[in-house]
Length: 363
Image 1 (cartoon, rainbow, N blue to C red):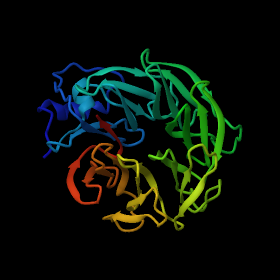
Image 2 (cartoon, rainbow, N blue to C red):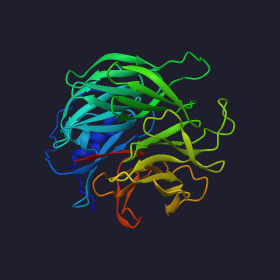
Image 3 (cartoon, rainbow, N blue to C red):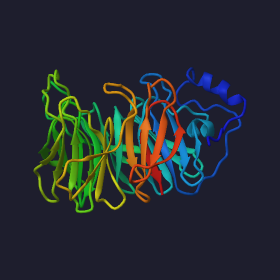
Image 4 (cartoon, rainbow, N blue to C red):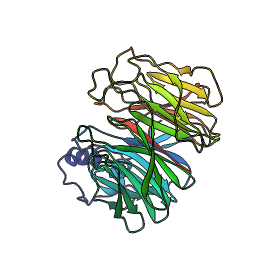
């Protein structure tokens, strides 16, 4: 069941939102809700350059969904392309890629408390401690160091390899093992950078298959990396897509599985116990981290081969290990999220905003 948040004035405000100046707060009767319990945030990217990103909130217990929670609470447009989100204590940090900022809000009430600006094309945020976090970037050729308490950029970690032909290195996701932060370089790249979080410097790099798009750390502290290989006509070259692993303490990637040409694997995720991988490749695939067999198809895609929409993002609940699969459909209409058990049995289906591309579980 979908709960409607708004009264009659909300449709009018949404029509006006496209013409609003970014950062301009409107005065109207805001929604007042409090959700201190666990839930799921969905980052709806919206359409590039349209500024129609949105945030949805889902209650797994009641199966109710609240759409447009950021705008309906704050009368403030979220911005252009909501790419990812992370939660620290009771605050949510939404990375708005094309707007070059991070909005900070209370996860219980959805009320905005501030923002971090001065970013180029931010992608993901990773906390080192309460007063220091890293923000990766698609175009800046550096990783921003931010202070979440003061909401300021305090420094940068240069990652430019000075190869002018490509924007290297464009940094994406981050995982941490001891003091080292690993980040994958996806766009026309084939590196995992290793950063010392105490000195804020790149200390090493690991070569992987072209265009590593996602990675996770398992219970044995093995880093798993999924690469899409690029595309056959790419000026950077093309690799067959592959699933790789980097053992704890190693700086060498081992290829576990190669996909066929034309495959587009992405969205690598891991279950709560850290022993089973899930990823998208048209359908949803599963792979035990100790298995020597090929990944097996768990959930088949409802779309024919070559469909450009369809399954777009995947995440696994760290507590229940249930799967949430985002269906962007055609990136014009509102997307759909499917909820499955760890064994692929359907649990629920609900509508969200345009282009659901990221999930963040609220503990």
